[in-house]
Length: 431
Image (cartoon, rainbow, N blue to C red):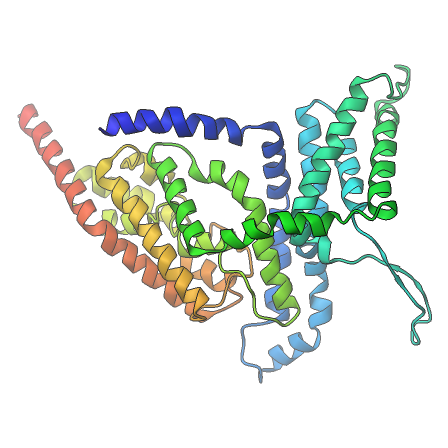
């Protein structure tokens, strides 16, 4: 039965999903967004500093709050305008996949995205005494991510078509390569800038409004408990058969997670309550504790209760990586893969974690996540930072770790007994 199901999963799901995750445009989107993660991580920490989780009457708190505007500037120049960086990254990645100049593709994609933004005219200020144009920043962050994805792909496809046609400007071999590439990118740049400007500024095409209408229901659905549970099930199911679930599902879900996280950080920066429950850090710190499958519970049990030589040795080897959310040694060492005994808790533990964490957040028992903390931090520390310094997140994380231990316990006992029987059989054979 298990073999038939494995064959079905491989033929009907893993192969098609694997091909989908390797699709050129999805890979470019994934690479472009992942490239922004350092900026998101670093920028989001300035949000914690500007809104410190400290008593209001402390001197350091008063100093930080009084200078919050200045402290927030690195956040506004990084995470707050992440779609700008993503547009360049997507354009660069997609261009190189077509063997085009990556820098030119990134710049053309960036200008295509910026041409969806309509600057706002401002009149002379009584104090400053200047007038001009202001770039509205609301659509430069996560809220504009889907427009950045669409326009970046469109721009690179135009670049590819013009490069293969007779309309590109080719320079003699004697011209330096950098200069030649600039002239080759001239034609697609003209097409992109003129085309995007015409649509946005002369035909009043509202890229962000239309895209918001299209993807809004999808984003709202992704923040619901059924959606969270579906993603948890699919990711752990793939892992159970040796397929990297996060790599496959994340390439599709990450743009939505980024939008949800941006909504939370923007709300906190404006002094409002974060609206979203399930951005990606929610999964990291309350579901995937110790790695996919909430395997921190498995690691703890292998160290503390196993009597078999193999189980004990594996636990000692895998515990430290699991503490920092690296669980491949456990998944492939026990193994969880194709192991009916351990697949059950591997799916059940993160599912229970998700339900509890979702309700704890929606009921206000724990603050929503607002920061992308480095994923290699131990669970309680990462949860504390991700929620903007909410000590209750530490308590919830520890409760969920204990719960994962309880869920894994009977299965690890059976697994250890099986190992002991096998080791005793080997010893008897040798004797």
